[in-house]
Length: 451
Image 1 (cartoon, one colour):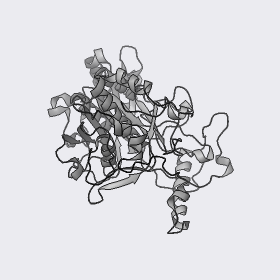
Image 2 (spheres, rainbow, N blue to C red):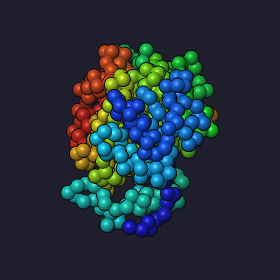
Image 3 (cartoon, rainbow, N blue to C red):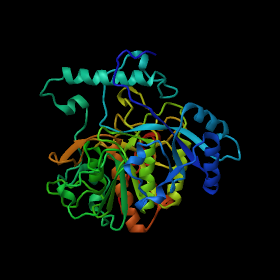
Image 4 (spheres, rainbow, N blue to C red):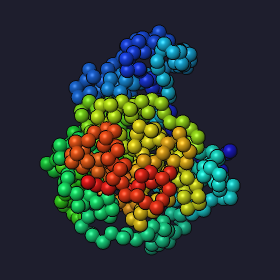
């Protein structure tokens, strides 16, 4: 279907490829790649200090092996791709090949006020079948119309339809109250939390004296956050017990922070940078990895086999990956969009968003079809207050991006309190969630609760 409301087109792939190497047969897999493509020189992440390749590695044509994950990132011409694909499914080869996607920070959602009748969902599937680019363009056009037509003094709560908060304690955010993080006696002490995002404002005054390890995986950009999204997520997961200005907004205020800049200041990055960030976090012993990023998944589209193996291998190494479900749904019109990549992988915990009345956020994606991505937990994701790069210092925004670090911080509390790691930590989060009178496709096991 043609795009009647053209919006800015998003790049979907980079032209590079991801190749999964079988654990016991990695050398044989690399040899198979070499024989098929002629690529015989690989840089290895394990050869660099702290498991982090230099920034130049991510813009070069040299192939890179992420040793903790067993994934190679390679640049190939069309003939090499055909040759590699020809052998990928042979039993003796043991490799999986996928194009490298462009992944985006899951930003503050757009909310159109109406849809034409031909975009109404199919009641039998609760899914949409129109062109994704059409929906993106329509969303952008309507959002622009809202800003042009809404009076300057309009009440944003009336425009957005947000409900007032039921949480009365103004010294802590409603999200900390809803998850009971504000009354936990644990703080994430001794736990390493990696937040892979747009980086972190290393000069933010609320984090003075904290253990913060930063690493950029974006060529030409340092770890310092020129976007704001990463600083906001880090603040929710690991912000101060006593910030300079109330309310308190951070969950695991004593956790060690690993800030991986895997998305640019514009909010995008390739799978290779994100996987390199995961590889780095595992190499540094991070028990919790938080990723408020993703790319749109179509109804019925299978999850990435490579990311699923990465999720499994991360769990085997003691690291739990928690990811945002995505903000593409228009629930006020009955449209629920599938869980985004890579949160749709079974071995990556997917987090949906709730508002302060503990209703599912209107933008939050859902598990609309078995086998293509399910929601595991829900957390506060509407009107979430947290840290922001200077000089702004603080900001209130919404999204499953904001829900995800709530769960990551809570995971750090459980890891400290019980010593649980990977699958056991996952189970504790699920078992202790507050059950809600909402479909599991939307909230999974319920609202995440601190210990």
